[in-house]
Image 1: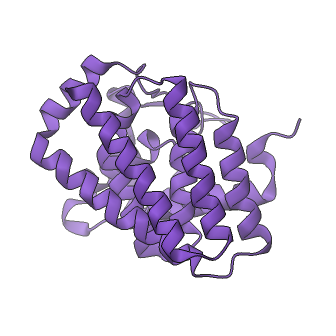
Image 2 (image 1 turned 90 degrees about the vertical axis):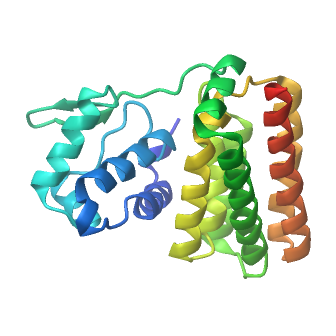
Length: 252
């Protein structure tokens, strides 16, 4: 069996996702924004548990910061338990964070910390950008490797274990935005997802809901590959509204 990350096309896909999340930070809040960018990459599973962050030199250039600032941010995340920094030839910053097991009580706590108004705002933002991404992608010619990548992301999600489901669900959703070629749109979708990632991770995984989501994911992909923007937008809207309804059900 070929390791998924060893395939050239997947390495390019992971690199594109890193570029989306690990974008340059503003000079005035360099440390805080660096921590935010790295934490987003970790929580979204762009760098999965056990995975290693890009080399320090590459990461500093990508974020547009000094290596001193980067080291401070990595140290802070290491102290907080998100990273394990190892020295030596095979060293680096390795992700140790793993999302907690789904728990309705954790979901209520996360919503209480966020606030219901901010939750509604985050869900509206996600609906706007992800539906827009599906609509835009469906209006493009999607062939060859780009078509294969979308189908592969769907297949990986359908075959995912419960432990890896949320990470691969994130990869599937973000790939739709990334395949449009719009950095701004991909960044917006990553930001939207990160705002609700803790909530999604806390939703108990019921097989009936996963089966329903699989049908909706298939409908989204079918509409995109058929070149039907309106159908793609409708399919994504139905899916995201269903997720929002599920959130509210567990909060009731």
